[in-house]
Length: 596
Image (cartoon, rainbow, N blue to C red; front, side, top):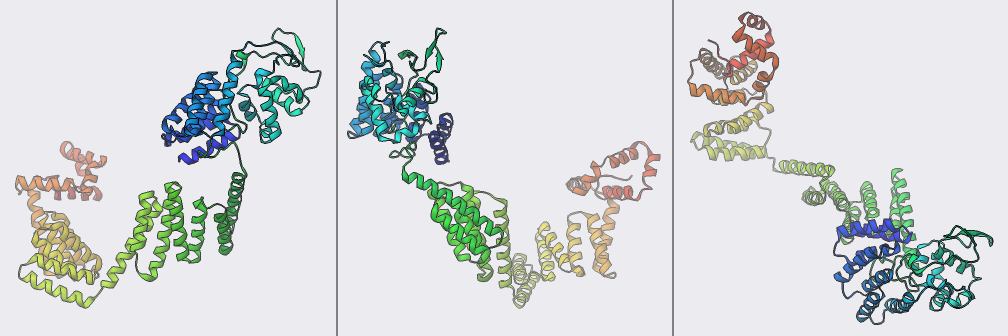
């Protein structure tokens, strides 16, 4: 999320990790390219690295996105100062003051730019620091605040009013530097501006000059204007360069409120960890207490809320669990939290509703919430819980609708319509009978007969199979199934069905007649006594049978079929193998292989 990346950028900037800050602000911009604050913050980070062209580009984008925002002009002016284009800097500050005439940052920036402009045109001086123009004066230009803020040794001094006043005085009149030369903080400042550590150096320490000769540390080396790194102007609080999480605040100025907020977040995480530990020990009351404290300390982290909801779920306090889940979803949406966290909260709510439904018998609410969770994130666990809820709901509905007496009445009505050859009406009543009593095998058998009359053979086959599944000794089921398979011209399968039925009732005439019909048809096919159209239809149907496909794709069987055509002696040896013989018979019955 853009807010998370921005927060990381602000933290990196505050730690002086400007390259990391630029990266994080860039990630945030990729997610929210129209957010002017992000460009402003990245401009500040570029300026801190003296990359003023990049800082200028982002500052211009800031002003373009929000022309009425004063901070954008502060960024623009600071970037121009870093490039030593003081005319443009002055113009930028003045434009900013038109939007906010009382903005202290813009006023200070304008004053610094106007003061730096004549100094930039003045020739560099080589006089001594204690007489005439000070060579240290150039160091105290408008970029001094950037350097002091960027160095961890001097950054804390910026919070000290007397230090800020001292640097301001040195900026206005470099010759006043002699007043503060004995202040160790000023020596530290000079060291930072020169790039050396004067505070820790001994008085006799020497530095190597450009010509290879040694000069004493008490006399600082001359720095020409064109050799100093370019920097942007900061105000007394260095506000013009620091990025802010919002237009009215600056992350580099950590006020008491921000410190307290950070401390509260840290304490909240500790409470969460304690809650996790208690949860694992099944000390649920203690876990709830810790999670509640975490929520009080930091109400923006919805994981604290969902964790407490999980405890309530374990405790059987479903109403409290649901309330926490709803709070987590509401809070998460307002903060644009990760959709996975939203889905997690919704799934937990659905789980609580499903547990409550075991008593109320109302699974609709749980199913609705699970579906909402899946729209946020398609989690396998959520999908499994949804399927369980839907299956339980269906079972409950069947139980509530169950009435064997009503089922018998509907079956009799179906029989009456069947006798009148009104098969669609018969199917309607048989279906109602099945709903009333789904374990009655006879109803499935009767509906299978209707489907057979209507030519809906696949539906009839399903009912016949269900009939046999419910009562494997119900012979009529085998008769129905065999007849349907016969009509589908699957004579070998029909023969197997009739034979299986005869195992339960050896003398059943209907089954015996079915066997005879199948044998006659199989013999006709073996003799080739079948029309070409019927043969093609049978072969096409057989080729869609997975069992036939398996036989034909078997390398051993392919060799056997080749031997039948080319090597009769080898074919005779194959016929001695019962397994091979059985597969050959299936191919013959399917019309794939013909015996002449």
